[in-house]
Length: 455
Image 1: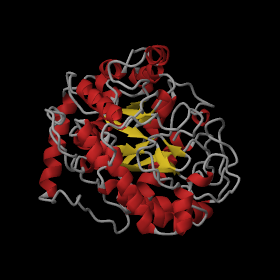
Image 2: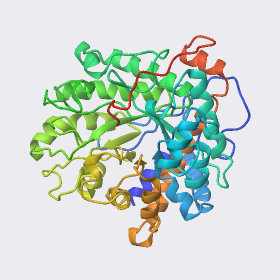
Image 3: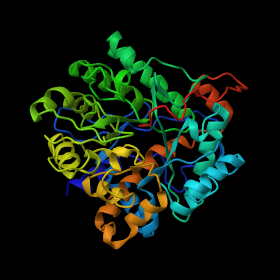
Image 4: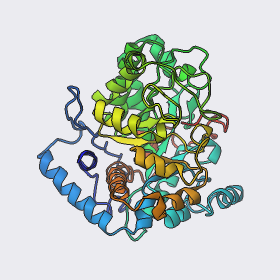
């Protein structure tokens, strides 16, 4: 079955056993996790991280699949459902956030801190955001990451948490100075150098990995054919599909060579919209041929480059699915086009489920269920985690089917491989040496604001 095959391949190599991945302290720099590679319809071929030789991959895949099956077999239904969610949480510390952040967590999530979030909801991922006060300085972020992993491995079925952020650079950079502040996508695109784009992504990936962040919601694969686009604009590499495709592939290679999962977004293409999906539901009027020519090339290039994850778009695309549902909830688009036609076998993550583009038609309890049925693996930042969780748990949501188990298997295996590697970041010295920050840094919070576009 296609779904099972995808998840089996995503378990290509675990960084360590889930129960020991975040073991004792170490001062060594994190070794890059092996970039995930899947079978595609193109000529992409498997390759390992330079630091890890590939030996008997068939045996490794089968061994890791058995280990993940055993892990999933020990999970309750609630734990399996929790693995589907990537959630925001307020505060600079996993256990001791500031009082205002405790109040925000209680109001929005019903917990005090990140450790309680993991214990109560068993989430598979946590997304770092500047306005949630997750990011102050390198030492603090590394400590937050380690605190989250410690909480995750204290649960009855210990699986590391996958930590992610939006680090596109340019107008969207959650981690600010003293990290290297690279030009945004359109500036890199104007330079036209794929080598520069790859170098920027590789360096950025190394800095993110030093903080324990193992998934980046970048690069933007949207082709900005509408210069008045209110949400993509300079976040795109440009208006030429071939040029954008070349830059996207370069950045995928750069991020993943540093052990960070790259995420191409926003499928099936958000470059020709006059509506911002944060506040409305855009409609793309391209024909199928226009989509093939304008929107598809960067995503094809990302898949060919072995992209680990692809983010969905909250928009209508009648040429790909005439139903009145956004792409995030469209099985014809996510399974029919992305999986079956483009041959993508990686992880599919939603754009933020708090955006209005995906909340226009269905309730917050129904949206996650429909996204899973469409072919999604990760549910990003629902506005109400309790409602989303309940929607997936109730029998009427059909989340008790094998789909939930297989998707949880995908999350657990990916988290163990990607997040497990980040657990080697234990001390400020490690963060300094890997991310090239100065000793004793007391950098101010990054400049990302609550109004900056989320994914």
